Amino acid sequence: RSKAFAIATGSEKTPILHCHGEQDSVVPVQAAALSKERVSSLLKERSGGNENSYEVKTYAGLDHSVAIDELNDVAAFLKRVIPPIPITTQTD
Image (cartoon, rainbow, N blue to C red; front, side, top):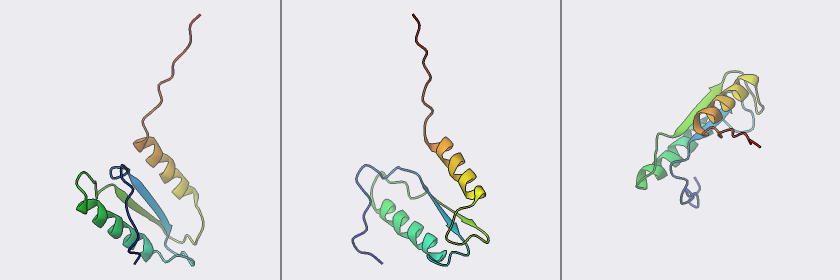
């Protein structure tokens, strides 16, 4: 466990989506749970942090790669957490 790990000031409320293949042969899937535990613990220690903003999604059969289901989950996450940009039209 890294003792140097820290949450950057100002990012305490930033939502996190951590996607991980259950068959990852490079980084064990258990690392996702450990990462969530560490980040959530640090956020809980800080006032104003949201320890519930860390979401882990795992994908059955996925190695150290990417899958369409994962990309769909990332797209849905981004749509949920990034506010829409208002479209303005110019008038002459």
